[in-house]
Image (cartoon, rainbow, N blue to C red; front, side, top):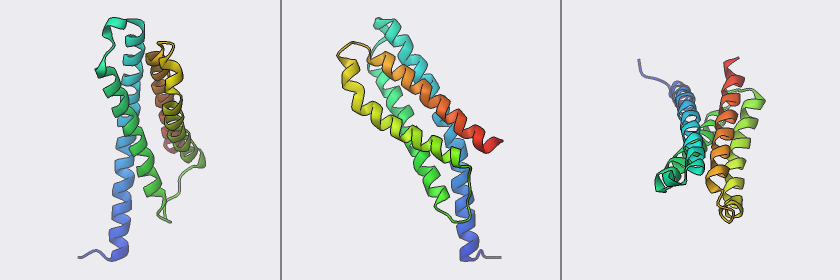
Length: 136
């Protein structure tokens, strides 16, 4: 039986929610790995290099994609989520932007790896808190 337009829209929304759920864990794990890697590189300067920044960029882009997926999912009138879930997404999105703006302050002190290590671990925690809002 062919799907009606409303049926297709609901199916697309559910697919978007499923992708948002899986992508959320990917963003959480990537930020955890990037955070630990950046902190190790900060502590051991011989491990510093482009690989740390590629990992950090991938983790933060994954998080930004996650927020965009969430915004797209809640744009459907039939989708409701806890307000704190959306708040944590907003916090993560703003944090990435602010960190990018303040990165030059840390590079002068040779602490950029420390800054991004703590930042990525913070973003991992924000992602876990956001997940806990919908898991409860």
